[in-house]
Image (cartoon, rainbow, N blue to C red; front, side, top):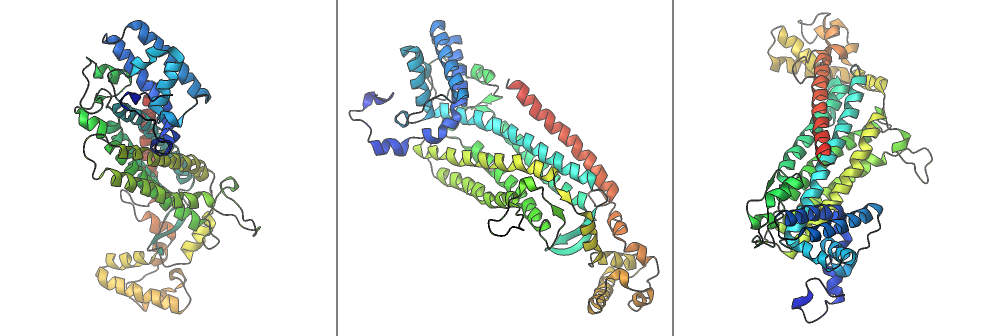
Amino acid sequence: MSKLWGGRFTKQTNRLVEEYTASIGFDKALAQEDVQGSLAHVSMLGKCGILPEDDVDKIKEGLHTILQKIARGDLEYSVSDEDIHMNIEKQLIDEVGSVGGKLHTGRSRNDQVATDMHLYLRKRVVEFAGLLHDLQEALIGQAKANLNTILPGYTHLQRAQPILFAHHLMAYVSMFQRDIERLQDSYKRINVLPLGAGALAGTTFPIDRHFVAEQLNFDSVYENSLDAVSDRDFIIEFLADASILMMHLSRLSEELVLWSSTEFRFIELDDAFCTGSSIMPQKKNPDVPELVRGKTGRVYGNLMGLLTVLKSLPLAYNKDMQEDKEGMFDTVATLQGALRLFAPMIATMTVNGDRMREAVNKDFSNATDIADFLANKGMPFRQAHEVIGKTVLYCIQNNKYLLDLTLDEFKTFSSLFDDTIYTVLQPETVVNARNVYGGTASSQVAAAITRAEERLQATGAWVTEYLEKSK
């Protein structure tokens, strides 16, 4: 069958060229969005008197039939029809006859594909905000259940100071909150309509772009037709946001892998989220967090790939821009897989509070509090720091921890020590002494949880509002 654009050509497209340039293998993921945009476009053509209502009704009927086929998975795609737009237009012409060829009046595939991707990413941004909401909810649930659980806090992966496990989890709640806010902010740039820009310069038909924007729930339209068809900033921004999000997931994954090891034994992941070994029957492998950690690299690669594609493209559309989709679809699939698993994995995680407490009792993470104790008694902090360094060295040399020392042993390092030092050194005292906004004291962590739950409600409301508008 001849190409829809074949009038200018005297030869059939080389088969290898056809296969190499076709995008239907991946852009069929935009099928629903393509029909959605076409329905709004043809409604506008009728409203503006560009097409007679009978033609508009026939085209709409055919598009709805195609939409049903897409929903059932019955739509057949052909490489010879190149891309999702040509495939659907061919299907429409087969469905309603030659009148289907009028659908493309006043538009180009350039502004059509841009519209499809705006529609597609708009859905995904809301979806990911909702999935992050669920992950935050799971983390907050574990935090509330562990408000009295103390574990070693680390810097340089060395024991630093004791903190609440809830405080540690809430750090990730804060990270994922920033991810949600980045996605919400990107929504403003995604929710701009390019349709009506034509191939690059607009169209001679008296179209109403703002009507189409209203039909598709876009907040605004592109002001410049060249920019409308060549802009992929919104995809780059999504890939950048996704890269930061995956980095956060990867950091949490690394800790889950460490914490579930025999050396740490701080947590145990539910069997449903682990796998075994084909040769070592005792193994329980944290494959989900390991794979998330590994897949982070491919998301970074998709961002760098698109930045490289676009770095030297002249205005307006170029075939290079076909490379904007596969990385975007891959990133979407990677995020969907990770986020759908992470919330239930965190919610079902078993926390070994006794093991965490044992670790805290067998380290020197309370040393800073002795320095603060001496500083409060008038010793310059730098001098106090040196005194405690010598005290810790003495403990290491004598196979002791700070709470094992007698008062006489403490006094060999400073006469300022008294028996209140034993209260100061208790892990609960150390934790609750950090009673500042954002600190690890239980009252501060409880307040942070309350604030996070309020933000959780706001995110849920934002997602619900979009879902209501898109019905």
